[in-house]
Image 1 (tube, helix red, strand yellow):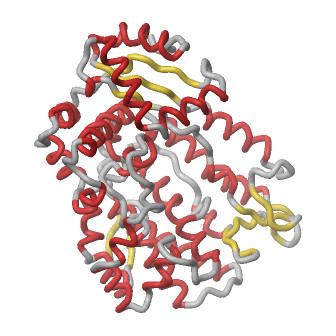
Image 2 (image 1 turned 45 degrees about the vertical axis):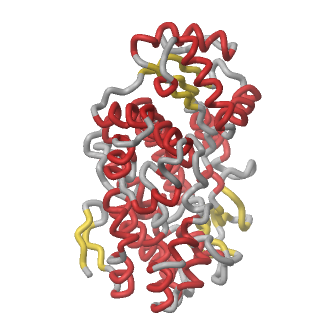
Image 3 (image 1 turned 120 degrees about the horizontal axis):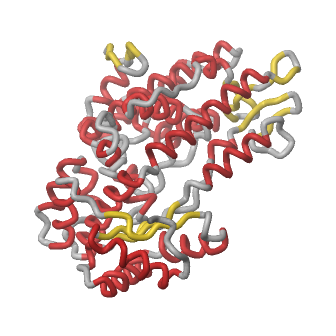
Length: 417
C-alpha cells in the first residue's frame, strides 16, 4: 500500500503492515489526536496517533537502511518485526492519554499497564499469530519477555528512536513552527554491544558533525516542550478533561477498559452526558472553550528542588491528597469542587540526553561528564528542568482570591499576576 504523508512523502507499507493498519484497534487511532488539547492554541495540530504510527513505521525502515549502510547485518525478518512493532507502538493509547496517565496519574502509562495484554488476547493477537510475529512483537513492545536483540527494541522505544524522530518533525509541522532536524542523522546510527547507538566516531576520530546533529534533535525536543507541550492553555484544558474523567471514575461512570473503545470526540461526548454533574460541567466547558484560568502559579524559581520533589510525591502521585487540597481551596473560595483543578506535574527530565553513543573511547552516553558535549547538555537539561510549573486553575472571577488563598496554603507566593 502506498500512502502520501505530509511529513515524509510517499510511504510504502508492506502487505504485512497493511493487514495491521486495517485492524479496528489501529483505525481507532484516527480519532485520537497526537497532541491532545494543543489545537486550542495551535489550530492546525489535529494530526492523530494513526498518522504518527505510520510515520514511525516509515522511519523505523529508514533506521534499518542506515544500519545496513553502516555495515550492520539486519535480516528481512528482523526488519519486518521492527516495522510491525513501530506501527503498533501506540495501539494502547487512550484519548488524551498523556494527560490522564502522566499528568494526573489516573492510569498506568499506555506502555506500562495491562492494556496491550488485553488487546493481544483479541483480534490483534490473532493477527500477529497468523503473521508469525506474536511473541516477537509482544517482546519489542514490552508486553512479554524480550526474545529479540535489545537493539531492535531500542529502535521503537529507545532514548532517540523512530518514535521521537517522527513526532518532533510532525508536531512542529502541524503546530506551524519552522524547526526541524537534518536527515543526515539517519546516517549516524550503528550497533554496539547489542544496543542502538549514535556513532560519533569515524576512522578512530570523533565526529563533531554527528554530535551537532544529535544536539539539534535535543534542542528541538526542548523547543517543542517549551512552546507546545507545556503551553498553559493546553495544560488547563487537558487538566479539566482529566478531572472530569477522575470524577466519572470515582462515581463508577467510566472505567479504564472503556477508554480503549473511545476516541477524543466520543470520550468528550460521554463525559458531557455523564450522570456525574461535575464531570459533565467540565467537559462542556472544554468543548465551548470556556476554560478555567491560572489562579496560582509557581515554578522552580520560587520553589526549591526538595520542596518540588515533596509536592510531586504528595500531589502528583497522591491522588487523594490532591483532591483534599482542591476541596480545601474550593471551600475557601466558595466554589464547586469541579471548579478548582490542581496541576502538579512530575519533575521534568530530558531522558533523551542519555542516548547511548559510540565515541573514540567506546560505548558511552551523551550526558556522561567526560563527553565533549557535556557542558551544553547540562545547560539544556537545566533549561528543560526549569519548565516545571505548579498551577491551580479556577474561574476567572476567583483568580485574584485564589492567589492569596493558595499562597497561604502552600507557603509560596504566586508568581502570576
